[in-house]
Image 1 (cartoon, rainbow, N blue to C red):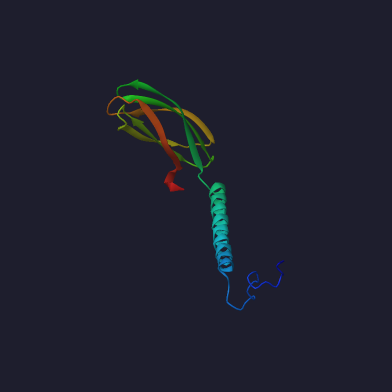
Image 2 (cartoon, rainbow, N blue to C red; image 1 turned 60 degrees about the vertical axis):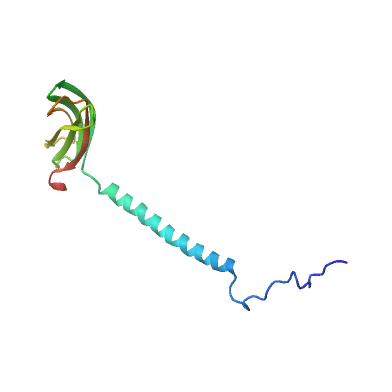
Length: 141
């Protein structure tokens, strides 16, 4: 015996008669969540773009360091800044156990946009490494 298309077990419920199905509610919820996440993603991209364009006016890189003595470390820095900006870079030195043994701020000004300079950090005991903490514009600009 062949089944006909009018078989009551296979018939779908009339649309709108019994409310929305669980699938339709899930689809609507997923669309709302997707829209919110999409807007948040676009806002994040915009924020990154604005911070990139208007970002820091001073950047630096630690090229190398040399342990000069038990109380001094020579640090070679390359600083890039706007020609009208005064930059301040912070250098930290560490002992073998990872503890801080020296920290110093160095100011870079003048008309040059790129500065290569060796600076000296005084330490409380022998350092084993040095790191550039960061560079900012003087006055926090």
